[in-house]
Structure formats: structure tokens, C-alpha cells
Length: 265
Image (cartoon, rainbow, N blue to C red; front, top):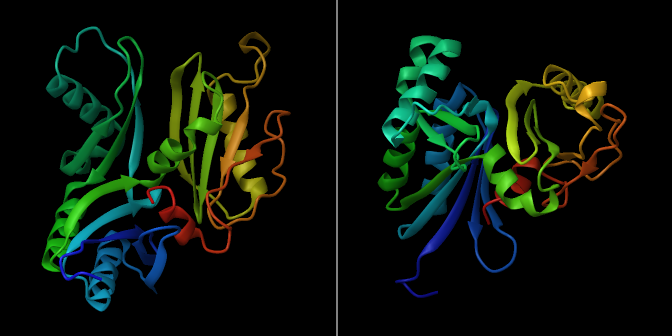
């Protein structure tokens, strides 16, 4: 390998496990992993150690964040908003209404949508982003991007989804995040703690459908349901409002954190 060549790493941060992989031709190659505790601070500490062990001094790191470390909200359309700054402020108010003053210290990213349509907003603790920059740059690398896994998985799997109407769930270990779309617009986004079994995920999806009027006689048929569960082999999922979900996979199902890295590989 040339001394001037740049390496690309993918780091997957979850509450109990951090995995570092080296990207290249073919599948990313694992180059370190360790258990952790203590929230995102503990996960970032673990990543710092893994980067030190990897010994890379030239290249970049893409970080995939478990949905445990992100917050999601649907931002309704408002004709009164006329600038990106106003949109950001409007979305931030929504987070603060739910989470309180702590949301003032979160960094926001809002999905681009056509005029008149709701948007999906994701919030990440600004202090987490700053620590990631500090440890990655301290290792002599560049932080290329930080991607919440729900959005990374959706972007990678979107071609497999129905175009205008669908129910999409990402079942990470200990958490289920859900996106609902109807008539080509976002209807709902939610992330909840969940037991690691198919019936618990199906129950959360049914509840989310009921909260949004999906399955009511007046709402028409239930749209296609898709479930992505990193680390689980494709299997038959319990029906959701009478619809059998389709399993979408990225990896072999052997290791959830290695599978999660494939969304950005």
C-alpha cells in the first residue's frame, strides 16, 4: 500500500457495542470492536481506543449512529416559513415542546421535500458531534459524515420500497424506528425501545398504524410493510394489520453492527 494512500473507516456506535471496519473493495473488513456503556460518551471513548489500535494516520471515518442516539420528529408544512433559518427554528420548537430545554443543544438535519409536504427532522446532541470531530481529528483522520442509522438504512433500501405508500421499520437491537408514508408524503416517524423479537416489533407497527388511521375502513387498504432488522436472518414476520411484512436485508444476519455498516459502505 502506498504511504500516500487514504483509508476509509466505518464506525458503528450503539449503546452497548462499537464496531470499526475498514472499507475497501467488496465488503468492509472488521478491524476492531468492543463493548461499552455510559451512553454516547462511553461509545465515543470506545471508538477513540479502536482508532488508536487501528493505527491509521491518513483517511476518513464515516460514523453510523444507532437510533438510540438520535431523536426524530415530523415537521408539518407551514406557508409562513420562507427561509432555511425559519424552518430550522420551527423544527427546533417542535423538539423543545417534547424534550424540553435540552433540545436547544441538539444539531438538526431536515429532509428536503417538495413545497407543501411534511419533512422528517433528526436531532443529535451537538456535544456528541463535537467529541466525534475531536477524537477523529486527534487520530489524524477526517470525519466524513455522521449518519443516523434509520436514515442511512432508508436511503440504501429505498429502491425496494413501494414508491408512494409504505410502512418501513428498522429493528436494531433494543430499538425499533418506523417511517410511514402515504400518497407520496411522510405521515409519521417514531423511534421506540423494543424487545428483540418479531412479535414486539409487529405490535409497535400495529400501534403506529392505528395512531395514524392506517387500517381504518375509511383509509383504504394497508400499504406494503417492510422490516429491516440488522443481525437477523430473513424470516417470516407476524402480520401487521393483516399484511405480511417483507424482510429487507443488507448483510448475512450474523452481526447487527457489521450489517449496519453496509448501509454506508
